[in-house]
Length: 289
Image (cartoon, rainbow, N blue to C red; front, top):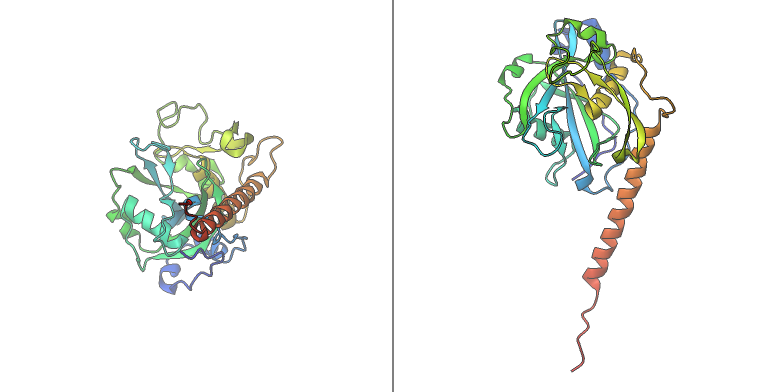
Protein backbone atom coordinates (compact mmCIF):
# COMPACT_ATOMS: atom_id res chain seq x y z
CA UNK A 1 0.00 0.00 0.00
CA UNK A 2 1.27 3.48 -0.83
CA UNK A 3 1.14 5.76 2.19
CA UNK A 4 1.49 9.20 0.61
CA UNK A 5 2.93 11.79 3.01
CA UNK A 6 1.60 14.76 1.08
CA UNK A 7 -1.79 15.45 -0.49
CA UNK A 8 -3.00 18.08 -2.92
CA UNK A 9 -6.74 18.62 -2.84
CA UNK A 10 -8.35 18.47 -6.30
CA UNK A 11 -10.53 21.42 -7.38
CA UNK A 12 -14.01 21.51 -5.91
CA UNK A 13 -16.96 21.91 -8.27
CA UNK A 14 -18.17 25.53 -8.10
CA UNK A 15 -21.89 24.79 -7.96
CA UNK A 16 -22.00 23.03 -4.56
CA UNK A 17 -19.57 25.58 -3.11
CA UNK A 18 -21.83 28.42 -4.22
CA UNK A 19 -24.55 27.00 -1.99
CA UNK A 20 -22.42 27.33 1.15
CA UNK A 21 -22.50 30.35 3.44
CA UNK A 22 -19.57 32.75 3.21
CA UNK A 23 -18.39 31.59 6.64
CA UNK A 24 -18.40 27.94 5.58
CA UNK A 25 -16.65 28.76 2.31
CA UNK A 26 -13.83 30.40 4.25
CA UNK A 27 -13.54 27.38 6.55
CA UNK A 28 -13.31 25.03 3.58
CA UNK A 29 -10.71 27.27 1.94
CA UNK A 30 -8.57 27.24 5.09
CA UNK A 31 -8.74 23.46 5.32
CA UNK A 32 -7.91 22.94 1.64
CA UNK A 33 -4.95 25.31 1.82
CA UNK A 34 -3.66 24.44 5.30
CA UNK A 35 0.08 23.89 5.53
CA UNK A 36 0.33 21.11 8.11
CA UNK A 37 3.42 18.94 8.17
CA UNK A 38 2.46 15.33 7.49
CA UNK A 39 5.22 12.77 8.13
CA UNK A 40 6.06 9.99 5.71
CA UNK A 41 4.40 6.82 7.02
CA UNK A 42 5.44 4.57 4.14
CA UNK A 43 8.22 2.88 6.10
CA UNK A 44 6.00 1.94 9.04
CA UNK A 45 4.16 -1.36 9.48
CA UNK A 46 0.55 -1.20 8.28
CA UNK A 47 -0.53 -2.84 11.55
CA UNK A 48 0.31 0.41 13.37
CA UNK A 49 -1.71 2.68 11.08
CA UNK A 50 -5.33 3.81 11.16
CA UNK A 51 -7.40 6.48 9.41
CA UNK A 52 -10.63 8.28 10.31
CA UNK A 53 -13.02 10.24 8.11
CA UNK A 54 -13.91 13.73 9.29
CA UNK A 55 -16.96 14.30 7.10
CA UNK A 56 -18.14 17.91 7.11
CA UNK A 57 -21.34 19.30 5.62
CA UNK A 58 -23.42 22.44 5.96
CA UNK A 59 -26.87 22.63 7.53
CA UNK A 60 -28.66 25.91 8.26
CA UNK A 61 -25.54 27.88 7.40
CA UNK A 62 -23.16 26.07 9.75
CA UNK A 63 -20.64 23.27 9.28
CA UNK A 64 -21.41 20.04 11.08
CA UNK A 65 -19.38 16.86 11.50
CA UNK A 66 -20.61 13.28 11.22
CA UNK A 67 -20.11 11.19 14.37
CA UNK A 68 -21.04 7.76 15.65
CA UNK A 69 -21.63 6.11 19.00
CA UNK A 70 -19.72 2.85 19.04
CA UNK A 71 -21.61 -0.35 19.79
CA UNK A 72 -21.58 -1.40 23.43
CA UNK A 73 -20.73 -4.90 22.20
CA UNK A 74 -17.29 -3.85 20.97
CA UNK A 75 -14.24 -4.81 23.02
CA UNK A 76 -12.50 -1.46 22.62
CA UNK A 77 -14.13 1.85 23.58
CA UNK A 78 -17.72 0.49 23.71
CA UNK A 79 -20.43 3.16 23.75
CA UNK A 80 -18.01 6.00 23.04
CA UNK A 81 -18.21 8.67 20.37
CA UNK A 82 -16.02 8.10 17.32
CA UNK A 83 -15.32 9.32 13.83
CA UNK A 84 -15.94 6.69 11.15
CA UNK A 85 -12.67 4.87 10.58
CA UNK A 86 -10.35 2.16 11.79
CA UNK A 87 -7.17 0.23 11.14
CA UNK A 88 -5.58 0.34 7.72
CA UNK A 89 -5.83 -2.90 5.77
CA UNK A 90 -3.04 -4.22 3.54
CA UNK A 91 -5.49 -4.06 0.63
CA UNK A 92 -6.14 -0.32 1.07
CA UNK A 93 -4.70 1.80 -1.71
CA UNK A 94 -4.13 4.79 0.56
CA UNK A 95 -5.08 6.34 3.88
CA UNK A 96 -7.96 8.08 2.10
CA UNK A 97 -9.22 4.77 0.79
CA UNK A 98 -8.92 3.24 4.27
CA UNK A 99 -11.02 6.02 5.84
CA UNK A 100 -13.69 5.84 3.12
CA UNK A 101 -13.81 2.04 3.25
CA UNK A 102 -14.31 2.09 7.01
CA UNK A 103 -17.02 4.75 6.69
CA UNK A 104 -18.78 2.57 4.12
CA UNK A 105 -18.61 -0.45 6.43
CA UNK A 106 -19.71 1.43 9.54
CA UNK A 107 -22.40 3.83 8.29
CA UNK A 108 -22.97 2.81 4.64
CA UNK A 109 -21.48 5.99 3.18
CA UNK A 110 -21.32 5.28 -0.57
CA UNK A 111 -17.85 4.45 -1.85
CA UNK A 112 -16.48 6.65 -4.63
CA UNK A 113 -19.32 9.15 -4.25
CA UNK A 114 -18.98 12.24 -6.47
CA UNK A 115 -20.41 14.25 -3.56
CA UNK A 116 -17.61 13.43 -1.09
CA UNK A 117 -14.60 15.69 -1.69
CA UNK A 118 -11.34 15.16 0.20
CA UNK A 119 -10.04 18.48 1.55
CA UNK A 120 -6.85 17.52 3.36
CA UNK A 121 -4.92 14.92 5.30
CA UNK A 122 -3.58 15.96 8.70
CA UNK A 123 -0.75 14.79 10.93
CA UNK A 124 -1.29 11.47 12.71
CA UNK A 125 -2.61 11.33 16.27
CA UNK A 126 -1.69 8.64 18.79
CA UNK A 127 -4.55 6.48 20.07
CA UNK A 128 -4.73 4.75 23.44
CA UNK A 129 -4.07 1.48 21.60
CA UNK A 130 -0.86 3.01 20.21
CA UNK A 131 -2.09 3.34 16.63
CA UNK A 132 -1.06 6.30 14.47
CA UNK A 133 -4.42 7.70 13.38
CA UNK A 134 -4.52 9.99 10.33
CA UNK A 135 -7.58 12.26 9.94
CA UNK A 136 -8.93 12.50 6.40
CA UNK A 137 -11.04 15.66 6.16
CA UNK A 138 -13.77 15.67 3.51
CA UNK A 139 -16.75 17.77 2.47
CA UNK A 140 -20.15 16.27 1.65
CA UNK A 141 -21.90 18.48 -0.90
CA UNK A 142 -25.20 16.55 -1.16
CA UNK A 143 -26.70 16.18 2.32
CA UNK A 144 -29.52 13.98 1.00
CA UNK A 145 -26.95 11.17 1.26
CA UNK A 146 -27.25 11.47 5.04
CA UNK A 147 -30.77 10.04 4.80
CA UNK A 148 -29.32 6.85 3.30
CA UNK A 149 -26.80 6.20 6.07
CA UNK A 150 -27.35 3.15 8.26
CA UNK A 151 -25.33 2.06 11.31
CA UNK A 152 -23.65 -1.32 11.11
CA UNK A 153 -25.26 -3.23 14.02
CA UNK A 154 -21.98 -4.90 14.95
CA UNK A 155 -20.05 -1.63 15.18
CA UNK A 156 -22.34 1.38 15.58
CA UNK A 157 -25.25 2.09 17.91
CA UNK A 158 -26.07 5.55 16.58
CA UNK A 159 -25.19 8.07 13.86
CA UNK A 160 -25.39 11.74 14.82
CA UNK A 161 -23.67 15.07 14.15
CA UNK A 162 -22.41 18.13 16.01
CA UNK A 163 -21.62 21.72 14.99
CA UNK A 164 -17.89 22.02 14.31
CA UNK A 165 -17.63 25.54 15.73
CA UNK A 166 -19.09 24.35 19.04
CA UNK A 167 -15.86 22.40 19.49
CA UNK A 168 -14.12 25.76 19.83
CA UNK A 169 -16.92 27.49 21.74
CA UNK A 170 -18.95 24.83 23.59
CA UNK A 171 -21.69 27.35 24.49
CA UNK A 172 -22.78 27.29 20.84
CA UNK A 173 -24.20 23.83 21.53
CA UNK A 174 -27.05 25.47 23.49
CA UNK A 175 -29.14 25.32 20.32
CA UNK A 176 -28.72 21.52 20.10
CA UNK A 177 -31.11 18.86 21.52
CA UNK A 178 -28.55 17.92 24.16
CA UNK A 179 -28.77 14.90 26.44
CA UNK A 180 -29.87 15.81 30.00
CA UNK A 181 -27.29 16.75 32.58
CA UNK A 182 -26.44 14.05 35.13
CA UNK A 183 -27.61 11.39 32.68
CA UNK A 184 -25.83 8.32 31.31
CA UNK A 185 -24.11 10.29 28.57
CA UNK A 186 -23.47 13.47 30.58
CA UNK A 187 -23.06 12.66 34.30
CA UNK A 188 -21.81 16.18 35.07
CA UNK A 189 -23.16 19.45 36.46
CA UNK A 190 -21.33 21.52 33.85
CA UNK A 191 -23.44 22.81 31.00
CA UNK A 192 -21.54 22.12 27.78
CA UNK A 193 -17.92 21.25 28.47
CA UNK A 194 -16.13 19.18 31.11
CA UNK A 195 -12.32 18.77 31.18
CA UNK A 196 -10.16 16.74 33.52
CA UNK A 197 -6.40 16.22 33.81
CA UNK A 198 -5.27 12.61 34.13
CA UNK A 199 -2.00 10.70 33.68
CA UNK A 200 -2.39 8.12 30.92
CA UNK A 201 -0.30 4.91 30.80
CA UNK A 202 -0.69 4.84 27.00
CA UNK A 203 1.05 8.23 26.87
CA UNK A 204 3.96 7.19 29.10
CA UNK A 205 2.00 8.42 32.15
CA UNK A 206 2.13 12.01 30.92
CA UNK A 207 -0.63 14.25 32.25
CA UNK A 208 -3.26 14.64 29.55
CA UNK A 209 -6.20 17.02 29.43
CA UNK A 210 -9.35 15.09 28.59
CA UNK A 211 -11.80 17.36 26.77
CA UNK A 212 -15.49 16.41 26.90
CA UNK A 213 -18.27 18.07 24.93
CA UNK A 214 -21.95 17.52 25.62
CA UNK A 215 -23.89 16.46 22.54
CA UNK A 216 -27.25 15.04 21.50
CA UNK A 217 -25.83 11.56 22.05
CA UNK A 218 -22.63 10.22 23.62
CA UNK A 219 -20.10 12.90 24.67
CA UNK A 220 -17.39 13.96 22.24
CA UNK A 221 -14.15 13.26 24.09
CA UNK A 222 -10.68 11.74 24.00
CA UNK A 223 -9.01 11.24 20.64
CA UNK A 224 -12.13 12.29 18.72
CA UNK A 225 -12.20 15.58 20.60
CA UNK A 226 -8.46 16.13 20.04
CA UNK A 227 -8.82 15.65 16.30
CA UNK A 228 -11.87 17.91 16.03
CA UNK A 229 -10.24 20.68 18.09
CA UNK A 230 -7.24 20.64 15.75
CA UNK A 231 -9.48 20.77 12.66
CA UNK A 232 -11.78 23.45 14.05
CA UNK A 233 -8.79 25.67 14.90
CA UNK A 234 -7.66 25.46 11.27
CA UNK A 235 -11.14 25.93 9.81
CA UNK A 236 -12.13 28.94 11.92
CA UNK A 237 -8.66 30.43 12.28
CA UNK A 238 -8.86 30.92 16.04
CA UNK A 239 -8.18 29.25 19.37
CA UNK A 240 -10.79 27.61 21.64
CA UNK A 241 -12.52 29.54 24.43
CA UNK A 242 -11.05 27.13 27.03
CA UNK A 243 -7.54 26.10 28.03
CA UNK A 244 -6.22 23.37 25.76
CA UNK A 245 -3.52 22.00 28.03
CA UNK A 246 -3.15 21.12 31.69
CA UNK A 247 -0.78 23.03 33.93
CA UNK A 248 2.76 22.08 32.99
CA UNK A 249 1.68 20.23 29.84
CA UNK A 250 3.68 21.24 26.79
CA UNK A 251 1.74 22.21 23.69
CA UNK A 252 4.07 19.95 21.69
CA UNK A 253 4.02 16.98 24.09
CA UNK A 254 1.52 14.89 22.12
CA UNK A 255 3.24 15.59 18.79
CA UNK A 256 6.59 14.69 20.29
CA UNK A 257 5.15 11.39 21.53
CA UNK A 258 3.84 10.63 18.03
CA UNK A 259 7.36 11.04 16.63
CA UNK A 260 8.79 8.87 19.43
CA UNK A 261 6.35 6.09 18.55
CA UNK A 262 7.12 6.46 14.85
CA UNK A 263 10.83 5.98 15.52
CA UNK A 264 10.08 2.97 17.73
CA UNK A 265 7.83 1.36 15.11
CA UNK A 266 10.39 2.06 12.37
CA UNK A 267 13.21 0.46 14.40
CA UNK A 268 11.10 -2.59 15.29
CA UNK A 269 9.95 -3.01 11.70
CA UNK A 270 13.48 -2.70 10.34
CA UNK A 271 14.69 -5.30 12.84
CA UNK A 272 11.88 -7.69 11.89
CA UNK A 273 12.66 -7.30 8.20
CA UNK A 274 16.36 -7.90 8.84
CA UNK A 275 15.63 -11.08 10.79
CA UNK A 276 13.26 -12.31 8.08
CA UNK A 277 15.90 -11.71 5.38
CA UNK A 278 18.56 -13.53 7.41
CA UNK A 279 16.24 -16.46 7.95
CA UNK A 280 15.52 -16.71 4.23
CA UNK A 281 19.19 -16.94 3.27
CA UNK A 282 20.51 -19.01 6.16
CA UNK A 283 22.06 -22.18 4.64
CA UNK A 284 20.74 -25.50 5.80
CA UNK A 285 23.38 -27.31 7.87
CA UNK A 286 22.93 -31.06 7.89
CA UNK A 287 23.92 -33.11 10.88
CA UNK A 288 26.99 -35.34 10.20
CA UNK A 289 26.26 -38.93 9.26
